[in-house]
Amino acid sequence: MGEDLRTERELSLDFLRVCEAAAIAAARTMGQGDRKFSDQVAVEAMREVMDSVPMRGRVVIGEGERDEAPMLYIGEEVGGGFGDGAEMAAPCPEVDIAVDPLEGTNLCALGANNAIAVLAAAERGGLLHAPDIYMDKIVVGPSSRGVIDIDAPVKENLKNIARRLGRDIEDLTIIVLDRKRHKKIIDDVREAGARIRLISDGDLSAGISAAVAGTNIHACIGIGGAPEGVLTAAAIKCLNGEIQTRLVWDPERLGVDKDKVPPEKEVLERLKSMGINDPNKVYDTEDLAPGKKIIFAATGVTDGALMRGVRFFGSGKRTHSLVMTSESKHIRFVDSIHIEGGPDTVIRF
Image (tube, rainbow, N blue to C red; front, side):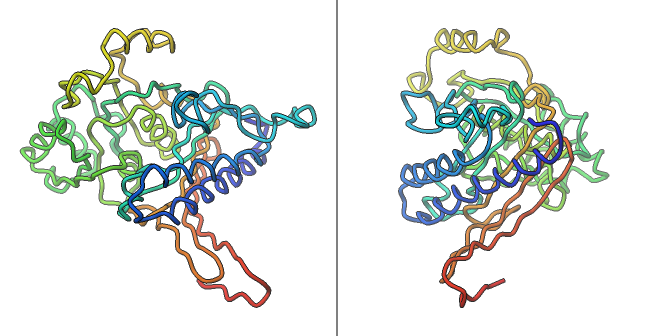
């Protein structure tokens, strides 16, 4: 993704602009109760700004297959290095991109916390092309790296995390999606003595929170989307944390009727076509995000543990974002004021 850190810095700022645009567009629809429309405007804004970025980008995780998604579909080419004048843009870096223009569509529609706009990028082959199914996940921060095991009982993992942090299990807070399929996990966490924070949506932002000191979240456990797992891994790699995952499609484990998920044969055939020959493989951080030059950017749409949501005022708007790079190990919280109006505009801090 370029030969020096200058390219990384420039792309980081460009991807920041991309996420800011998506977040602002989505935030204008906050609380209107139409999650599909919120997602649509975020996708459109993200795609428009992305085409101004000097790169030859390829979407590896996006809004779905081409027939299902008119924009930011898997395999779509994005960036200013394509189309008219592409010959002049030949030196543009080739980039694989994973996006979630609005993670937490329901959260935005309801005006609830932790909706974000997200993008991760790496050199070609630097992000796993994950199928759009579910993943069992466990995510921790740097202090607990190396002591978790997705196959171990919940209590054993919590005991190991507590020991690494120099705490009792009772001092831990575990974040879990509030789903029927997580009843056993919730019961096991409570039986072990740890606290639980149940969330309605947004396991990507939850996973990131688990890897950042000061959020009072010590692990994220449970089943969520596989594409979100890859995006989480990109962030976790920049944060020196750890994520372990395994693909899940069994309706019983997911707590849904059989007709709600594709037949196992169909899933296995699709996995094989994507180069996944071992469907039971445990994926770690490096498997999900093997890239050496990863850039992760996210902008808050609504308020959350890490970022504030978009603020609108008479002469502009204010955004709060997180930008991280794995190579230079920079983690930046960016507070931006987008000014509109003439020279007499009053800037609010």
